[in-house]
Image 1 (cartoon, one colour):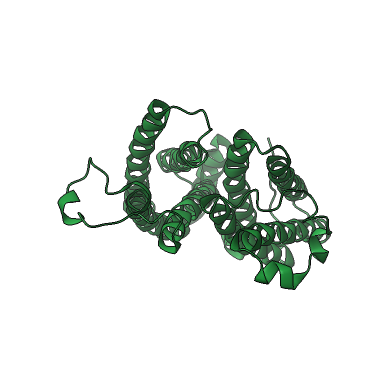
Image 2: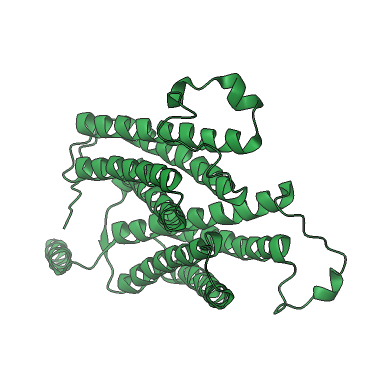
Length: 342
């Protein structure tokens, strides 16, 4: 098991700064990647790692900016991905220099390896033009984003300032937090199937995936709300968990609305929802700006939910310990204090 030990108070802020920069760069990368899929621009540049024979960083800016929108989005996606890779390298260096906790260097190296794998997956998807690779690429991105969020959390001042306490009831909070994060990621996996339908895919398979997508969406919403209720009712010390779980509930509810909007812009008002008679004149404009924006926002918000849920789960384990050794130690401390008072 990977152990992250406590760090001296004279730690450097640079690992956290770079980790936050990595999060803030990866999230737009997911937005742009979602837009690439929505606009079907994944094959706008047929070669890789070059761009129409040019080195990725030497492709003429004028041709990129003034070219077709598909080219602009796809090449921009590659440049942004390269920036994420460079920041990941910087994070490894910063952690090696300033964060001496055992396990931190390993985690930063894992993040670097992960972004390299994601880049190779994206390149292989272009070279081989495979829907399966596109699906894997789409699922791996949110997992990497969740990892960057975790790195930002465990390098933060808040993380270092928290002193774990023993709470036998904390297991319930931690289990619900982990289940919420897991369900959120499963929801992304199902969504990836809906986004990357193979050419020979059947309507029946798509229908089943839609049904499961809707069911898991409500499960995620229910668990997010339950997580917030549990945190606010029984764990007053866990301020980060309480606030972030409340924010997560709001984001999940907004995501449900985005999901309905995304379906409406692509296929029309969902037949299983009331109110269809209010939209008889709604016209679907394929690949319109509105459709691309709503669908891409729905995809990116799904990754945001996973990242938020992972942060909450990490904090739930940071605030509370179920370790028998710690329980015995605290009991002994209380006994000693009580004896001193007597």
